[in-house]
Amino acid sequence: MGLFDRKNCDICGNKIGMLGNRKLEDGNLCKDCAAKLSPHFSERRHATVNEIRQQLLYREANKRDVAAFTTTRSWGSLSSMLRIDDNTGRFTVTTTRDMIEENPDILPLSDVTNAVLDISESRSEITHRGPDGRMIPDDPPRYSYRYDFYVRIYVNHPYFDDLRVRLNPSTVKVDEPAMTPPPGPMAVGRNAPGRPVVSRTVVNAAVRPRPFNPHEDPEYVRFAAMGDEVVDMLKNPVPQQTFVQQAAQNLMQNIARAIIRPSDEAAQDEAAQEPAPAPAFKFCPNCGQKLDGPSRFCPNCGQKLGD
Image (cartoon, rainbow, N blue to C red; front, side):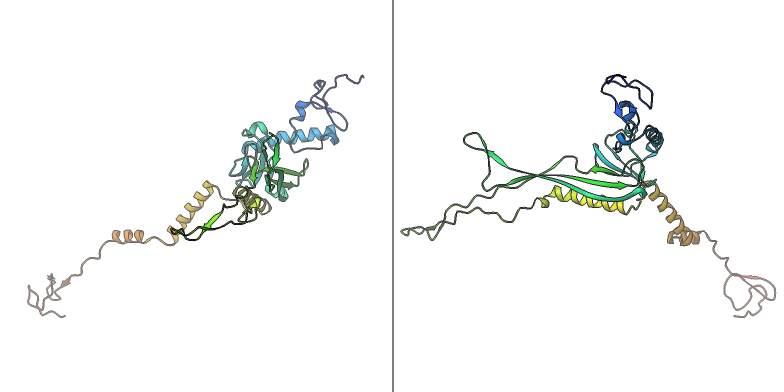
């Protein structure tokens, strides 16, 4: 075979275009089959044809997990988002809105072996345009800082060792503020008529209230705290209750309280429904006449009655 002869994909059997071959350790892979592999898989050149077949079977089964996945918590943005399903104790990292089309790897939280916050920082000197049109640095020099916040998730998985999610939707930019200009001459003394103004010039020095720290910027603080929260959650996963689970728990608690300890209102209703005791009547021991009220003698036969 010539060097530029077209090859067949060892997975699907289709012809591979001039620039579409993805080399395997013992074969060839077309770009369409390669697109079905896990986006976190980086050992393709060292994988065998049989290993690629096994991974594609796993990726096909993963579609069922994606269809059953419900996002209950998330961090990041649409281009890089960590999603948690508290109903099943699983997570995934997505890069698009359409999870069905993307088919991201769905992993149990128990597969996480470690998680770390990785803050990427870069610094550049701030310049301005001089009288001759050239860009010159400020004097004294000041800098512009750029930050991106990533959480690297290490996992126990057959096809990759780690995933990475970016928390901030766009790069956090923090510019060092310019130093405040020195104050002008200050006049002291009394401006009374006929008296000269006594003045003194304050030392011509730049004034900065406190040392500049870019890590105190509100956006930096927000995403650093978010990263710590995500790392702690991944290291110590405690599933949160969903709305349905919380509602069911509240219902069971209310039923238990009603059975064990009825409310005062329920007790009052039960008391109101109880029949009133029948009034007690007296009868004459001699003739049996019914006595309607207290009396010392029977109105029928005159028998003396006891107390």
